[in-house]
Length: 483
Image (cartoon, rainbow, N blue to C red; front, top):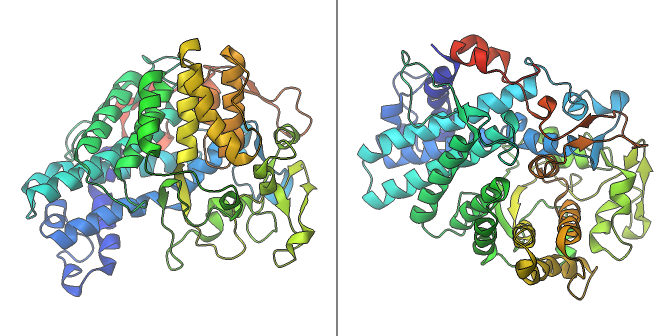
């Protein structure tokens, strides 16, 4: 049985039990008691809801979403991990670009992605005949397909060359429906085919998801936000801008002061996030733990001198680096503190609880997508680009009038603003890839690992895990070059 097939059939049974623990007793009494088959999981409204909860639960695993956000940060040029024993050997391979086919983090990205996809595909298969209303069927199907699309967006960016570099490069295997134990898993589609599949799912979700106020479940604004991200990566500037505007329409920017409250509770601009409970969290493996400056968490992430210096003195976001003498000390003890190779970071709070909600999308990102997409369409669109950029700069307190830059200078100003606004949220590495800049640390005096990988370099693409190649012989000839 192929590895992807195993994930698809076995993992579904396991997650339904996990998701069902909050339901009434009769919904736990299944036969066999160790698992529940897919068809039975769709036999009642409560079990269907438990199965959907199970998909979200998969995404909260520490080695998955949190890990991918942190990995995307340390692979960029602005954030690093400390050297020596203080990094606890976490994210060292990602920072140094020394991942192998046996890297456990890379394996988890692949494994859990296909678990999510597998379970979403069970909805595609069984929801049409489930004992719920047609409206509920459509809603569940839209939600499942949105989650599938989001997962494929992670996969194709980790394991393939960027769309902007080569849309015809090998992507990842596309699974539209559950595979039986004797069915052959597909080979890798092209990057373009994967992106087309992502858009197909997101467009279906956009058309069929009802209005929702819960930011911890896929909602229409989140779907539009992901469409903006996808089109930005595809360099479809007009659609990227259009969807960015739609996504932020009902999510106004918060105050500058709200940016300094720790990012553990939603503000007006949160579009999508992960809800973390005190009785169900990843503890020290949360994003906020690694950014914590007080040694309460892992406290192993720093920012470089160049990045720290990119913030103007009057930039409200620079206060995200103010660190008190201790977590309980007076605010007046706050100072910019350099330790080890770089500057301590206080953007995310880990001192009050380790059950911090994790932001996945904010409207500020949508303003910056809009700004970049408009600027890349030429001089006629620059007024719109500058207006969107000004909204972010005004909130940060660094500008009161639109930028005087134009052309490439304007685009670079927007990208710089994007770095400052979104650092720590899992964007920088993918921004370097899609803009064809590669990763270049030569000339750095603070990075303890100097690398220089130009756009398109093999090491900018993660290896398909050896476990998958061993279980799926059809993929063996399709391993990424250099591994």
